[in-house]
Image (cartoon, rainbow over all chains, first blue to last red):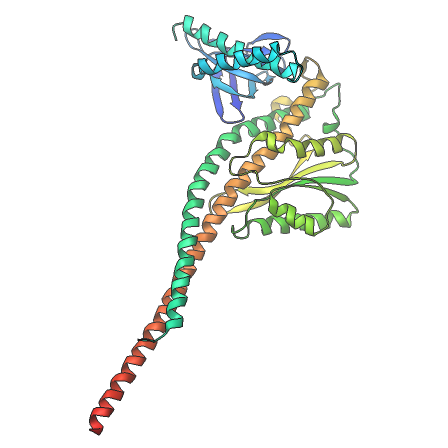
Length: 140
Length: 287
């Protein structure tokens, strides 16, 4: 039997996923990490991106997070997402709109808009779209 | 017939009051359902972050964050969460009484106090007491957002970091069930290890990405924010529940008074009729 680890994903609004998994992939600050059971304790911040939970070879759940925290204990993985929505729920139109708005803000060099804020918004929108793309290719 | 006109007006006015309290009861009931849902929805997050913090307190980090170190207590900061509106029974006054008991105890130990308030009721109460108010936020409505309370939390965290306060407590009502709300005082900072979990014993530390200071700063700030936010959401649910119960008993009381007055009115009316009849009979007999 393959080893499993307990995974909890919660956002400020609700509990999103709770259960056993064989492996978890998360967009940590220094690059994506893949976590197997009995990983060493680790705490990291998350970047906007996709969290994938591999429950079995056939079952892979994917969630979008716009940042948050990741805690790893050998037998417990906790992801505190700032906003985690099921990737299927992402409203593509809203994401595209947010992206254009961010790009406009970036192009507007008048300096009124906070550059960093705009960049984060752009990154979030791009990641949402990429998650959607991947889901679609998988035939979801 | 001019019998008991005053009584009839009185009954009428009490009936109007009853209509109002009954409407408020129903509004509170439906609002309670919503706020309770919100409270339950945010609970997992604050529970999980609490758990992580507990793990963290048991680790042996190289970098000791100031939020994890106990100091001699000379001054404490408290965040009091109250409702914005009244007419919710003893909810706020119970909370303030509990706060005052604790404050008096601190006073005896010569510990000074800084207060931040959430909600107009707490602001009014502690403002009147000439307490040392360092920040307040109110009128957050039924669906408060996390960014509404970031300001006062920052005040407290900065004060803690600069050593102006040595402990941070949050005081709010805990939602036990619709009939019971319990005022509670919770110590947020410093975070200390409570009972050890068996599988976490031994000398170990986390791997931090990107580095310990940044991650811990972020995590501990989020922790305080989420606990205070949870307190706020929970207090909202408490407020609606308490108001519902208070308004229900007000409606019931109004009903009792109305039936008593009705009895008095009926008696007076009957007496007047009897008197009139006996007058007529007496008149007829005289003829």
